[in-house]
Amino acid sequence: MIRLVRAELFKLRTTRMYLGLLLAATGLVVLVTSLQFALGDDSSLTIEGAATVVETEADLRSVLDVSGVAALFTLILGATALTGEHRHRTIATTFLLTPARSRVVAAKVVGYTIAGGAFGVVVEAAALVVAVGWLAASGGPIPFGTTVLAGLALTPVATGLAAGFGVGIGAVIPNQLAAALAAFGWVMLAEQLLGGVVPEVALWLPFRGAGSAITGQNPDMGAAAGAALFLVYIIIIVGAGIQVTRRRDIA
Picture 1 (spheres, one colour):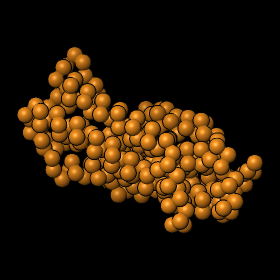
Picture 2 (cartoon, helix red, strand yellow; picture 1 turned 90 degrees about the horizontal axis):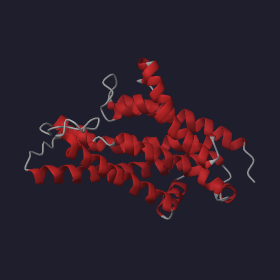
Picture 3 (tube, one colour; picture 1 turned 180 degrees about the horizontal axis):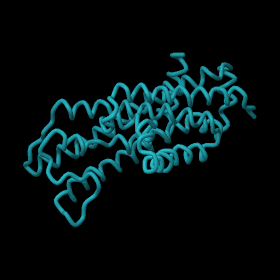
Picture 4 (cartoon, helix red, strand yellow; picture 1 turned 60 degrees about the vertical axis):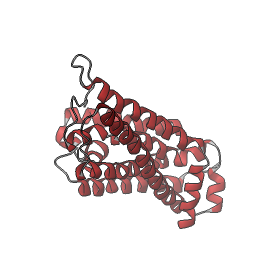
Protein backbone atom coordinates (compact mmCIF):
# COMPACT_ATOMS: atom_id res chain seq x y z
CA MET A 1 0.00 0.00 0.00
CA ILE A 2 2.84 2.41 0.83
CA ARG A 3 4.31 1.80 -2.62
CA LEU A 4 0.96 2.61 -4.25
CA VAL A 5 0.57 5.80 -2.22
CA ARG A 6 4.07 6.90 -3.21
CA ALA A 7 3.20 6.23 -6.84
CA GLU A 8 0.11 8.43 -6.56
CA LEU A 9 2.10 11.26 -4.99
CA PHE A 10 4.70 10.93 -7.75
CA LYS A 11 1.97 11.17 -10.39
CA LEU A 12 0.68 14.35 -8.76
CA ARG A 13 4.16 15.91 -8.69
CA THR A 14 4.67 15.21 -12.37
CA THR A 15 1.32 16.41 -13.73
CA ARG A 16 0.16 19.94 -14.47
CA MET A 17 -3.30 19.51 -12.94
CA TYR A 18 -2.11 19.80 -9.35
CA LEU A 19 0.13 22.80 -9.99
CA GLY A 20 -2.52 24.52 -12.10
CA LEU A 21 -5.23 24.17 -9.44
CA LEU A 22 -2.79 25.22 -6.72
CA LEU A 23 -1.77 28.37 -8.59
CA ALA A 24 -5.40 29.21 -9.37
CA ALA A 25 -6.49 28.73 -5.75
CA THR A 26 -3.53 30.69 -4.39
CA GLY A 27 -4.16 33.57 -6.78
CA LEU A 28 -7.85 33.66 -5.85
CA VAL A 29 -7.08 33.60 -2.13
CA VAL A 30 -4.52 36.41 -2.48
CA LEU A 31 -7.10 38.47 -4.38
CA VAL A 32 -9.92 37.83 -1.92
CA THR A 33 -7.73 38.46 1.14
CA SER A 34 -6.44 41.71 -0.36
CA LEU A 35 -9.97 42.84 -1.19
CA GLN A 36 -11.09 42.22 2.38
CA PHE A 37 -8.55 44.78 3.56
CA ALA A 38 -8.91 47.13 0.59
CA LEU A 39 -12.71 47.30 0.78
CA GLY A 40 -13.09 46.90 4.51
CA ASP A 41 -13.08 50.63 5.23
CA ASP A 42 -15.47 51.53 2.40
CA SER A 43 -19.03 51.12 3.64
CA SER A 44 -20.38 51.65 0.12
CA LEU A 45 -18.30 48.86 -1.42
CA THR A 46 -17.85 45.85 0.83
CA ILE A 47 -17.73 42.12 0.40
CA GLU A 48 -19.21 39.53 2.67
CA GLY A 49 -16.88 38.81 5.58
CA ALA A 50 -14.73 41.92 5.05
CA ALA A 51 -13.33 43.14 8.35
CA THR A 52 -13.44 46.91 8.75
CA VAL A 53 -10.75 46.75 11.44
CA VAL A 54 -8.60 43.77 12.36
CA GLU A 55 -8.04 44.21 16.07
CA THR A 56 -8.66 40.81 17.64
CA GLU A 57 -7.61 37.24 16.97
CA ALA A 58 -11.18 36.50 15.89
CA ASP A 59 -10.96 39.26 13.26
CA LEU A 60 -7.70 37.92 11.87
CA ARG A 61 -8.91 34.33 11.90
CA SER A 62 -12.00 35.38 9.96
CA VAL A 63 -9.86 37.09 7.33
CA LEU A 64 -7.59 34.06 7.06
CA ASP A 65 -10.42 31.54 6.75
CA VAL A 66 -9.90 30.44 3.16
CA SER A 67 -10.87 26.82 3.79
CA GLY A 68 -14.04 27.06 1.71
CA VAL A 69 -12.22 28.21 -1.42
CA ALA A 70 -9.31 25.80 -0.98
CA ALA A 71 -11.54 22.80 -0.21
CA LEU A 72 -13.54 23.35 -3.39
CA PHE A 73 -10.33 23.21 -5.44
CA THR A 74 -9.04 20.09 -3.67
CA LEU A 75 -12.45 18.43 -4.04
CA ILE A 76 -12.21 18.88 -7.81
CA LEU A 77 -8.59 17.73 -7.70
CA GLY A 78 -9.65 14.53 -5.96
CA ALA A 79 -12.39 13.99 -8.52
CA THR A 80 -9.69 13.74 -11.22
CA ALA A 81 -7.77 10.95 -9.45
CA LEU A 82 -9.50 8.10 -11.27
CA THR A 83 -11.34 10.02 -13.97
CA GLY A 84 -8.04 11.39 -15.29
CA GLU A 85 -6.82 7.84 -15.81
CA HIS A 86 -10.03 6.97 -17.64
CA ARG A 87 -9.66 10.06 -19.79
CA HIS A 88 -6.03 9.37 -20.73
CA ARG A 89 -6.66 5.61 -21.00
CA THR A 90 -4.03 4.66 -18.42
CA ILE A 91 -6.54 2.98 -16.11
CA ALA A 92 -6.12 -0.43 -17.77
CA THR A 93 -2.37 -0.35 -17.19
CA THR A 94 -2.91 0.72 -13.57
CA PHE A 95 -5.24 -2.19 -12.90
CA LEU A 96 -2.95 -4.63 -14.71
CA LEU A 97 -0.10 -3.62 -12.41
CA THR A 98 -2.38 -3.76 -9.36
CA PRO A 99 -5.32 -6.11 -10.06
CA ALA A 100 -6.86 -5.44 -6.62
CA ARG A 101 -8.88 -2.40 -7.65
CA SER A 102 -9.89 -1.60 -4.09
CA ARG A 103 -6.20 -1.11 -3.22
CA VAL A 104 -5.80 1.32 -6.11
CA VAL A 105 -8.79 3.38 -4.98
CA ALA A 106 -7.64 3.33 -1.35
CA ALA A 107 -4.13 4.43 -2.34
CA LYS A 108 -5.56 7.30 -4.33
CA VAL A 109 -7.68 8.38 -1.36
CA VAL A 110 -4.65 8.40 0.94
CA GLY A 111 -2.36 10.05 -1.62
CA TYR A 112 -4.80 12.75 -2.60
CA THR A 113 -5.70 13.43 1.04
CA ILE A 114 -2.01 14.07 1.74
CA ALA A 115 -1.73 16.24 -1.37
CA GLY A 116 -4.91 18.11 -0.41
CA GLY A 117 -3.44 18.84 3.01
CA ALA A 118 -0.27 20.23 1.42
CA PHE A 119 -2.50 22.29 -0.88
CA GLY A 120 -4.19 23.82 2.17
CA VAL A 121 -0.84 24.68 3.78
CA VAL A 122 0.31 26.61 0.70
CA VAL A 123 -2.97 28.49 0.26
CA GLU A 124 -3.19 29.41 3.96
CA ALA A 125 0.43 30.58 3.90
CA ALA A 126 -0.39 32.89 0.98
CA ALA A 127 -3.36 34.38 2.87
CA LEU A 128 -1.20 34.84 5.98
CA VAL A 129 1.55 36.62 4.05
CA VAL A 130 -0.98 39.04 2.53
CA ALA A 131 -2.70 39.72 5.87
CA VAL A 132 0.48 40.21 7.89
CA GLY A 133 2.03 42.32 5.15
CA TRP A 134 -1.05 44.54 4.89
CA LEU A 135 -1.31 45.01 8.65
CA ALA A 136 2.40 45.72 8.99
CA ALA A 137 2.31 48.26 6.14
CA SER A 138 -0.69 50.03 7.68
CA GLY A 139 0.94 50.14 11.10
CA GLY A 140 -1.92 48.24 12.68
CA PRO A 141 -1.64 45.50 15.32
CA ILE A 142 -1.10 41.89 14.27
CA PRO A 143 -3.24 39.90 16.74
CA PHE A 144 -1.64 36.53 16.06
CA GLY A 145 -2.44 34.00 18.78
CA THR A 146 -3.49 30.46 19.49
CA THR A 147 -6.93 30.75 17.87
CA VAL A 148 -5.38 32.05 14.64
CA LEU A 149 -2.77 29.29 14.76
CA ALA A 150 -5.54 26.72 15.28
CA GLY A 151 -7.39 28.04 12.24
CA LEU A 152 -4.24 27.84 10.13
CA ALA A 153 -3.62 24.26 11.28
CA LEU A 154 -7.18 23.06 10.67
CA THR A 155 -7.57 24.34 7.11
CA PRO A 156 -5.20 21.67 5.68
CA VAL A 157 -7.30 19.04 7.48
CA ALA A 158 -10.41 20.28 5.70
CA THR A 159 -8.71 20.51 2.30
CA GLY A 160 -7.18 17.06 2.67
CA LEU A 161 -10.51 15.44 3.56
CA ALA A 162 -12.20 17.28 0.69
CA ALA A 163 -9.68 15.76 -1.72
CA GLY A 164 -10.35 12.29 -0.33
CA PHE A 165 -14.09 12.82 -0.76
CA GLY A 166 -13.46 13.91 -4.35
CA VAL A 167 -11.66 10.64 -5.09
CA GLY A 168 -14.82 8.82 -4.06
CA ILE A 169 -16.92 10.92 -6.43
CA GLY A 170 -14.52 10.16 -9.27
CA ALA A 171 -14.70 6.45 -8.46
CA VAL A 172 -18.49 6.52 -8.77
CA ILE A 173 -18.55 8.75 -11.88
CA PRO A 174 -15.79 7.78 -14.36
CA ASN A 175 -16.23 10.76 -16.68
CA GLN A 176 -13.89 13.56 -15.64
CA LEU A 177 -16.11 16.50 -16.60
CA ALA A 178 -19.22 14.89 -15.10
CA ALA A 179 -17.38 14.11 -11.85
CA ALA A 180 -16.04 17.65 -11.56
CA LEU A 181 -19.47 19.13 -12.26
CA ALA A 182 -21.08 16.78 -9.75
CA ALA A 183 -18.55 17.78 -7.09
CA PHE A 184 -18.98 21.49 -7.80
CA GLY A 185 -22.76 21.18 -7.99
CA TRP A 186 -22.98 19.35 -4.68
CA VAL A 187 -21.06 22.05 -2.79
CA MET A 188 -22.32 25.15 -4.56
CA LEU A 189 -25.92 24.12 -5.31
CA ALA A 190 -27.19 21.09 -3.40
CA GLU A 191 -25.77 21.98 0.01
CA GLN A 192 -26.65 25.66 -0.42
CA LEU A 193 -30.24 24.81 -1.31
CA LEU A 194 -30.53 22.40 1.60
CA GLY A 195 -29.06 25.07 3.85
CA GLY A 196 -31.84 27.44 2.88
CA VAL A 197 -34.69 24.93 2.99
CA VAL A 198 -33.67 22.64 5.86
CA PRO A 199 -30.96 24.44 7.85
CA GLU A 200 -30.98 21.93 10.71
CA VAL A 201 -30.12 19.12 8.27
CA ALA A 202 -27.56 21.18 6.35
CA LEU A 203 -25.42 21.49 9.48
CA TRP A 204 -24.68 17.77 9.20
CA LEU A 205 -23.75 17.71 5.52
CA PRO A 206 -20.15 17.05 4.40
CA PHE A 207 -19.06 20.60 3.60
CA ARG A 208 -21.62 22.97 5.06
CA GLY A 209 -21.67 20.94 8.29
CA ALA A 210 -18.61 18.75 8.88
CA GLY A 211 -16.19 20.90 6.85
CA SER A 212 -17.34 24.08 8.58
CA ALA A 213 -17.01 22.40 11.97
CA ILE A 214 -13.38 21.51 11.27
CA THR A 215 -12.50 25.18 10.80
CA GLY A 216 -14.70 26.38 13.67
CA GLN A 217 -17.57 27.76 11.59
CA ASN A 218 -20.20 25.32 12.86
CA PRO A 219 -20.99 26.12 16.51
CA ASP A 220 -23.10 22.97 16.88
CA MET A 221 -20.12 20.67 16.31
CA GLY A 222 -16.47 20.66 17.38
CA ALA A 223 -13.50 20.29 15.04
CA ALA A 224 -12.82 16.66 16.06
CA ALA A 225 -16.48 15.70 15.58
CA GLY A 226 -16.51 17.47 12.22
CA ALA A 227 -13.43 15.56 11.05
CA ALA A 228 -14.95 12.27 12.25
CA LEU A 229 -18.22 12.99 10.42
CA PHE A 230 -16.33 13.92 7.26
CA LEU A 231 -14.42 10.63 7.48
CA VAL A 232 -17.73 8.78 7.67
CA TYR A 233 -18.88 10.48 4.47
CA ILE A 234 -15.56 9.61 2.80
CA ILE A 235 -15.90 5.96 3.82
CA ILE A 236 -19.43 5.86 2.39
CA ILE A 237 -18.62 7.50 -0.95
CA VAL A 238 -15.33 5.62 -1.38
CA GLY A 239 -17.03 2.34 -0.47
CA ALA A 240 -19.62 2.98 -3.16
CA GLY A 241 -16.87 3.94 -5.59
CA ILE A 242 -14.95 0.73 -4.91
CA GLN A 243 -18.04 -1.36 -5.63
CA VAL A 244 -18.64 0.51 -8.90
CA THR A 245 -14.97 0.25 -9.88
CA ARG A 246 -14.87 -3.50 -9.24
CA ARG A 247 -17.84 -4.09 -11.53
CA ARG A 248 -16.88 -1.66 -14.28
CA ASP A 249 -15.52 -3.01 -17.56
CA ILE A 250 -12.20 -1.45 -18.52
CA ALA A 251 -11.57 -1.01 -22.21
